[in-house]
Length: 382
Image 1 (cartoon, rainbow, N blue to C red):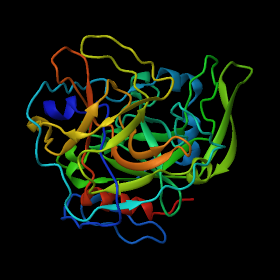
Image 2: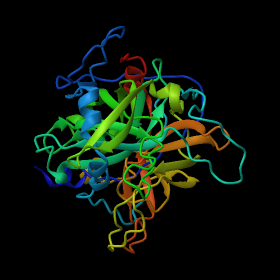
Image 3: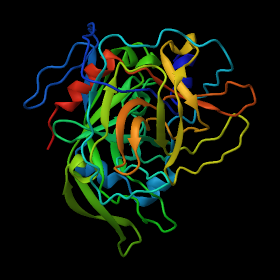
């Protein structure tokens, strides 16, 4: 296992900019792609890697008891990408015509006008277990952040590729679920799944991340099954048992953010996520129990050759590990809680050499990103 693969298992945040109209580019081929086809969908391009989740939705959902969620740790806790200074790379930028897919309605309840930032219902926490590991071992219980994004079947979650694929074992994660608007209250089950739990069916990522561990492609789009609303009760033996109700499709319940690619590098964006890890100096300002946000203007980041990073964009934000996979949203409207996904929290940076993360970055969303998104956006699940 090379050092880069291990360290980059924990990138923690990301971003990107967006605007525009529709456009796309095609991508190359890879013999390593494991594409799969679902009912009503065409075969994916050769450089889009698709894999089926290893558990049924009932298995994955029931695995995550309140105690396991509380004890899960951020997936990037063993990674430390702390880039200090450096000249901004000129590699990030459009590869074709700018494009955008509009968001679907907010879902999940009414919205209000406010001087405060209304948090998006679409954003939540992702939970999963490590492949080739004992799922009953708490060291295998991990989490990231993610968001619902618009798709034909209202079943797509956007996150970072390192939140779906383990570069150590070269496998996709197990027991993968998404909980929008996750909130960890003071009681054992307060607010943990207000809109339900959605288990993975298809993982869709770019071949250059899966095969080459290239963090310029650290994004993934997951097709999820219809969700379950879960209430947990203890039986006579003191063990948690799930009381489950089917609640339908993800997008019908919380809506879906729009998607944009080939946008200009400098844009004002919000980033959302569930940071919980520590800064390089050991300070740990976040708990991961509630959603946090940052706002700023993106710009090109320096190259980081040992991580194959050449085309990241980022902005000033102190997010730590756990925020990985959360969205960069362009043109976010607090009244409707919607905007356009134009990046995902991928890597945290210490650019001023004070052992504190001060920027987050995302792969630049270009035509390659659109190709992966398009496969997921047209893939059906029950």
